Length: 118
Image 1 (tube, rainbow, N blue to C red):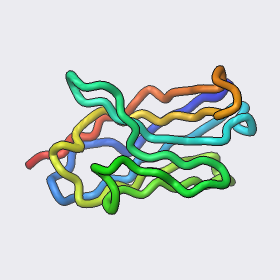
Image 2: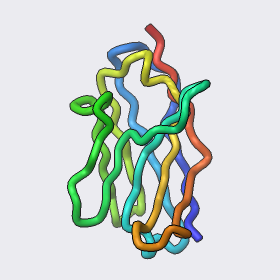
Image 3: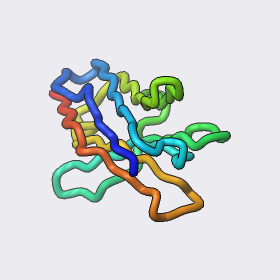
């Protein structure tokens, strides 16, 4: 099992920045990909950014150039730096950890609220 705890959400004005953190614990050696997803009210959960071991990060088109995902393996922590925030970025952000070879290895954090005011 892998446990994920997100932090760093909050209220920010448009144009501002936030950094989300996701601390992983447990059998993290079984994980080869970490991602950030978000879900706004009435919408489906969508991928924001993902980093897979040995690959370049991928981003949703809506956040390219504004968000950056990074991973500190020594701290078992994944970050999402969010700059130039827009009201449409308002959502609950979820951290995800998975192993692409084993579908059962798919874990979610509890989510953290990000609200961007105009």
